[in-house]
Image 1: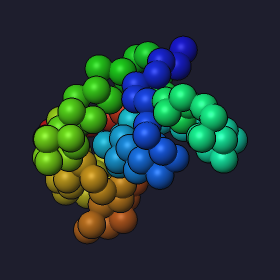
Image 2: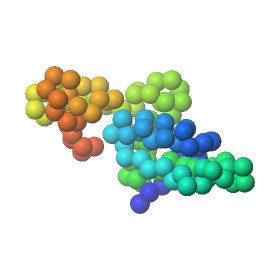
Image 3: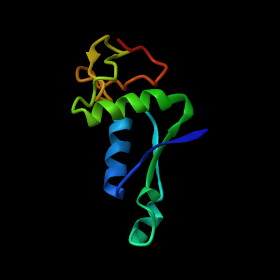
Image 4: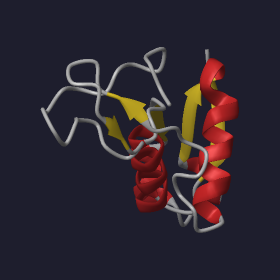
Length: 109
C-alpha cells in the first residue's frame, strides 16, 4: 500500500525528491502530475511523492537527510555480488565490474 511522504510545492520539487529516494534504493511515485497546469486554482500540495508503506521509515530518513544537506547519511553502502567491491549508496552499478546493486533485501554494509 502506498503512503504519501511529501506534499511538493511544484512538480519539479516532487521529481527531485523522487529521484533522490530512488538513488537511495527506495521506490517512489509522483502523483498529481496532470494537475500541474492548474496550480493557480488548486491547493499547493496537489503534487506529492508517495512510497510503499514498508519503505516509509527509510524514505522519511532519506528525505530528512536531504533537507539537512547530507543526502546519503541514511543510506547504506552496498557490496557487489559479482566482485565483492563496496559501493556508495548513490550508485546503482558497481564501479569496478558494472554489476547491478542488489534489491532492497540484498547485501548492504
